[in-house]
Image (cartoon, rainbow, N blue to C red; front, side, top):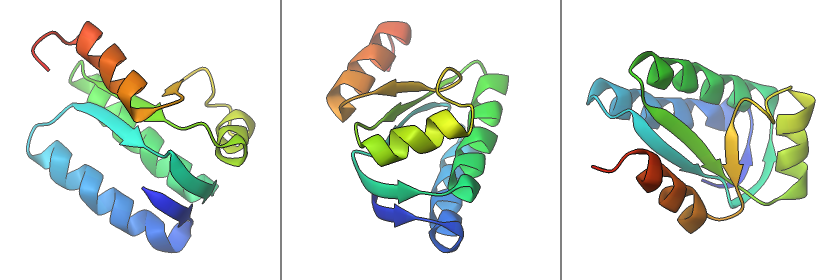
Amino acid sequence: MRGEFDAYSRRMLGDLLDAALDRGEYEFVIDMCEVTFVDMSTLNRIVGAMKEVYRHNGHLDVACADRNVLRAFHLAGLRHAVRIYETREEAIAHLKQRVPAF
């Protein structure tokens, strides 16, 4: 993901997540390292995907270090519900530790 994510761009993210879920993929790292703004509709869409992933015993992690985006997660009460790593590489490494076949 790159740039700003609001109600308009949420649909693109939702389509990508839905396509992966429809293929039976339940191990995710959402790379938000280049995101500068995220609104509540986007966070709600991520939470929806997270619930579906967890129903299948999968994992959904986020890579992000932007203060504004992290603050949005915090204000939405998601900071402790979503595993957030500073880099994509760190998130993938942690996912591989939890899912050896990944």
